[in-house]
Length: 567
Image (tube, rainbow, N blue to C red; front, side, top):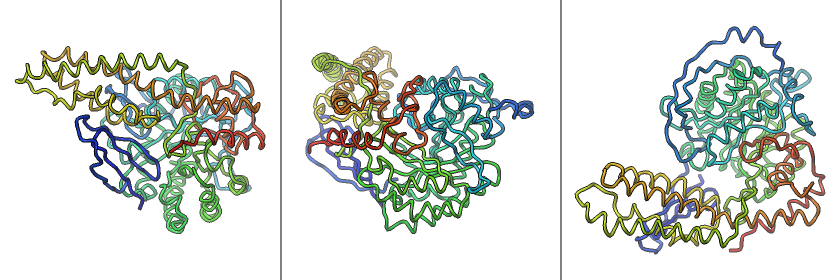
């Protein structure tokens, strides 16, 4: 079993290595000693005519939702529902059909270069297929907020750009009454069907059952493939999306099983049991088809080729509704372009290849890097704003420690180390040179603890103003701090784009790095790619144009030096 290793530096932070990825995840009080104190090793845990009669038979279900303030949205965490969303949600009867999905796709505002199909029946001469738009809805950024995701999902469905909607569900996450893990997807589907009168049969409703780095499923990752886990994930998704049938279920294969060749026999036995459960769900009418999601292949394509040859090919011959592979592919991955063995498997076994996280790559250091366009801002301006923000936050903290806390000792106030984030970040600024690592620390460590501190201040009338002042000062500091860390990633993204531009690989000077990255993935073997707020809804270039094989080789080779981090 792989382990989660935490090396704690008492000065301020910890480095976590999860399956080879280095993450800074913990900030500790700035007053603590700077020496290495401990190493802890833990186990990681359309056609409207087709459905006229069905509309009249819909059952009405009433849901009351609640609003809970949150700083972030996590793909596998329960999403908080807005107070304004007191809604009547209808059960969406029916399932995706060939004629309805084809009708949807041909209405697209642009003519896609390919027409992907998802098999929803047994493979062979009598196989049935449904049409899928090349841009799918799913795989949002880890810290994406609800509103941008809702807005772009509604735009994509209402404009007939996307009909593949994938929710992400962690069966082990405990949610409160009224909370939904798939809130955004449920809202997008409900408004498309109910408000826009687009038939349910036009949409390919999918779910990804698994976990992520923030909310791991459980210490025994193998449990992600057991019958009870899969059935629970299907049940949760059906209830949250208000559908009677899921068109496609994707089960996450744990990294420790997928990437270790010696465990392929064990993996095969587990997948057979998973397929048995999914085939039964298909027979029961709850599911139409299913597939499997694999972890990133960052150093070699050999593990994927072995999986296709020794595991997925015989599995697909035995289980007829196995119809897709979901792969994390990007311009920096080892499976870019896809190996010939995978392309042959796709053709012979009628598999849909779903591209996941096309804008996320991994640096040689093991840290993540997002291929995205950053807002231009001079480094000098960022430094000046950051200095001002530091001064304000530190001034508030000093006033609290030196004056307010001693004067109001009769009150139950936070200890000094809880009101020291300005000092901590000033001391540790040089350690943060990766935006995604910083965001992880900010969202999982700083925001929750800062919230708790401000709430402590707000308990007493005498310290309400202090709580407000500290909250304002820290929000400004965190904003400026984020902008300063962004500069490193912005330079890297600019260098990658300049390298591509010098070789004439950009279709136009106005092309964004996101467009190039998505276009490259779809040119390199993927049938569809999952995106949400990371790419504007109006973008069509990646779905209407393709790179040649030679250009793909150039894109990968030119990007590689800029993804290498000096140690």
